[in-house]
Length: 143
Image 1 (cartoon, helix red, strand yellow):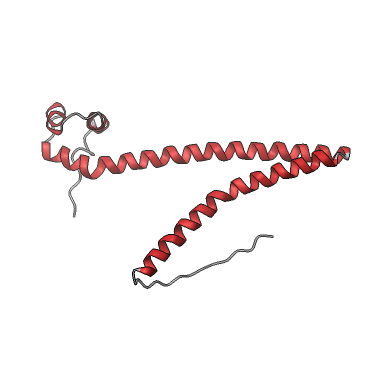
Image 2 (cartoon, one colour):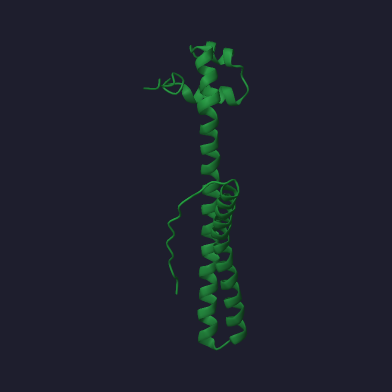
């Protein structure tokens, strides 16, 4: 059974992490928070980097969620303009609203395209190195 990290279980682990991120030497952090220098070093090498990566991913997700909310708002406004233009018979405005809607749909689809393109590249690399793999594919049709 693996040992638990004494720094992670320390009640002041957030302050320890902040000191390490600020560049404070391991030995100084260990003395300040009554921890052993090797445990602080192991924590910095094994857990702190993982925590920082998770925090970065969370920031990116929050940013992407904000962008998607803005995109959905634009899409809703374009739909409202389209409905008004169709109601008044203004075909020029209706076509402009349709173009905007097409643009928002394209922007919404781009992250999915990039995600699948990245997976295809990773699969191609695996296959080019002689790896074998079994794929189970499921296709959904959208109408």
